[in-house]
Amino acid sequence: MKIMRLFILSIVILFVSGSTCYPSEKIVIRPPKVIKVPSDFSSINAAIENAAEYDIIEVAAGTYNETLVISKNNLRITGGGKDNTIITGNSASNVITVNRGNGFALEKITIQGGYIGVYCSWAGAALSECRIQNNIGDAGIVSTNGSIISLGQTDISGNNCGVMVLYNSVMRIENCNIFSNSLEGVSAWFLGVARIKSCDIYSNGGDGIQVGGGSSVRLSLSKVHGNALSGIGATEGSSARLGGGNDIYSNGDNSGWRAGIGVFHGSNVTATLTDSSEKDDIYLNNGPGLFISNNSSLFLKIGNVYQNKGDGIHLTLNSTAQLEEVSLTDNTGYGIACNQQSVLSKIGATIISGNTLGDTGGCW
Image 1 (cartoon, rainbow, N blue to C red):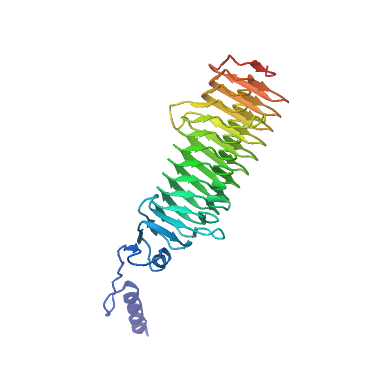
Image 2: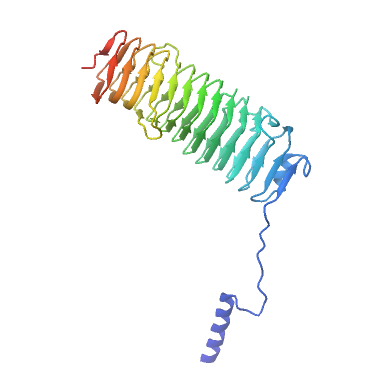
């Protein structure tokens, strides 16, 4: 009986270790394949259906009337340049939907004429050297449900919102032009996170950048200008971080509370030189340079606020401001105005001079 148990145990050990009498099977991994449209397949959809993970779909110059759904991982679609390769959707559908696909890459293509240009849900994607334009739905690009998106060297225009970042999603936006959208250029809501660097955000019909519902934006080395409402608007417990090298100018509508930067309802703005040695400049806005309201806060370190058509900084409704090495000059209103139990703490070599109504109003 003991000998029989030892024999069975030996068979089990041989089976687990793979040392059997049968030849071992080799696992063959197919190398990535390049699929060409229209030479290999007449449509991009057909190419996607026949593609495997890590394949590259090369789309030749031309206009393709299609809507695409991406659910495969690590798929790359590249065009012949955004002036040459165009995907036109229809107003009832998203042009491209990325649903639970990770590692998707889209480059050198124009996306236009859909409901949403690119919609990403539970996804990871990178878009580069694209143009996203003239989509009639919520936005040119929507990132939602925890998606992580990288957006680079892309022009986004003629949509309602340019870019929306929602529900715990993160979007990194670099070297992009976001302009002439009907509403906001960039909108982050419901714990969305936007990281914006070296971008030009201008001539949008709402805020240049809007952040709300506990979301956050970080902006560096960028221009935000000529937007109809505020350059940056933060509300409902959200935060805006300026990392240096930003120019925020010619925004607002003379309402008195639209501003270069408007901060409301328990939100905050912080400006430090964390990403650049260049100062942040806030100037020539059609209202205050900064409007801080409704239990909100400002920490401004090393920056220039000048020639705004209102107060340089306006504090109201239990808000606070702390300044270090800031220059507040030549604004049409006060350099700093404090109303309704708001508090200013001026620290360091802050310069306040040349403002039409005076250096401070109600702040001391």
